[in-house]
Image 1 (cartoon, one colour):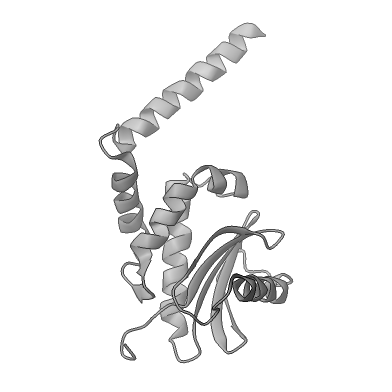
Image 2 (tube, rainbow, N blue to C red):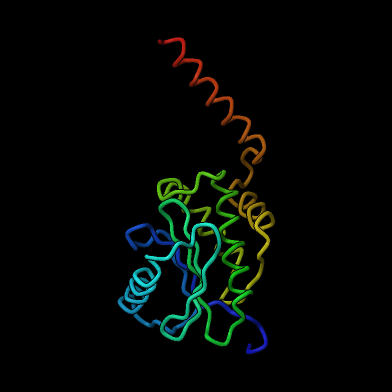
Length: 177
């Protein structure tokens, strides 16, 4: 497994450092308390950085952490100190972009929690047991959308129906004024 790049964990935290969605792939943090301590450490050490436009890379506690922020969400991907930073950054960007596609660019804590099932499916499509499966955001999002719909309306039909519902709501509001 030394030749295959691997990921230690993927963290999605809110602006207070609390968990939104996390997935650990190794036993480097054997207890729940150790995982929470690592998350707090990563959050506090990266809090003062400005990783809003591009991903930042940090070496923390012997791990490479690549992270990026949007609105009130903080995305982190951790790899071992012997991993390639560009590969870890590619995993982060794939996760970040796939979440953006799935949440229709409305990426904030509230919408993330409302669509937590999609985010967890997204993590499952990207990494399995620490092994990177996919990093292309559009492929990840389409696989998640297919898995989450299971015979319901297609994603494009769902978008149209949501647009019609929004238009109907605006029309109703304008008529009530």
